[in-house]
Amino acid sequence: MANRVRTVVGVLLGVVLLWVLFRGTDWQVLRAAIGRAEPGWLLLALALGFASLFARVQRWSYVVRTTHPATFRSLFSAVQIGLAVNLAIPARLGDLVRGFVLARLARISFARCLALVVLDRINDILALVSVLFVTLAAFPTDTDIHFASDTFGNPEPFVVSSSLMRPTVITLGIGLLVATLVLVFLYFRQSFVVALLDRTIGKVSATLAAKLRKIFLNVADGMHVFRSAADLVKAALFSLLTWALVALSLAAILRAFHLEFPWYGPLLVLSILGIFTSVTVTPGMVGQYHVPVVAALLMIAPLMDPSEAKAVAIVAHIVAIIPPTVLGLYSMLREGLRVSDLAPGLSGATSRSSSQR
Image (cartoon, rainbow, N blue to C red):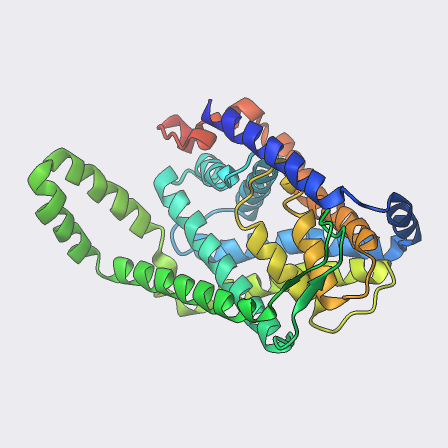
């Protein structure tokens, strides 16, 4: 029931975002821009998008292998199915499904798999923050960002101060660094955490303390990558590679539309996209994907026609959702999984059968 509510709310929000974005659009300019796009560059963008998903699997493999052996096939299926579910259902429930599928295919406990997913997400976001800092260093923060009338259906032009970028990125970076340090502390001070649970929760409920202790130890079991500097470095490098391939895919799309842009242009689009889509709130990221792309394009090319920017956003969105959709469906077919088989993962439920084939 909760998933249906999320989906309905997501659909409604997507409709609102599309209405805000496309009202006042010059549809003739939009269609002409799409018609001028070069297929060769778009095919390259699509190929780079597929490559980024393979790099994402390889990145996760360095985290998983420190805890439990798992085949590339199991990791690949878990990642792609999870990404496909993230597109279909808001609130990143696909991350739960990723853990559930890996538990089922590799016979690892569900709690440990969720810890592995969380670590991969942190690694992913830390790499995005690195991209944000590079973008911040290159983007001229002494120039305000101007949006013409009808960019987002607005009757009058409006201005956004570019000075807001620096504190936003710095705050995000500090928050993620603190979260990572907390995880490292929890991993290396497990006995302290267990004792703290017994001294606090245990005095209220020994049963609850025992359950929390079991959950914590299962999660800590999935963080063995902190003991392997080599695997940590490899995972971080593949995370940067993943985002680099996405940035190159965006650059190819901009080239397909014959746009002139500074070298940091694709990184700026990627940075804003990464922030706005870090948690999916609309099915297929409809509207949620388009708005930040249009905003970023008008930041790097202020004289660009807003309707042309919307054309680029439409095509970029199609290119972005094809790889995870295709590979997700392929993985489900290859593993013999149906949508109903993923229900325990969507609810976060665990059972003995959910970790065995």
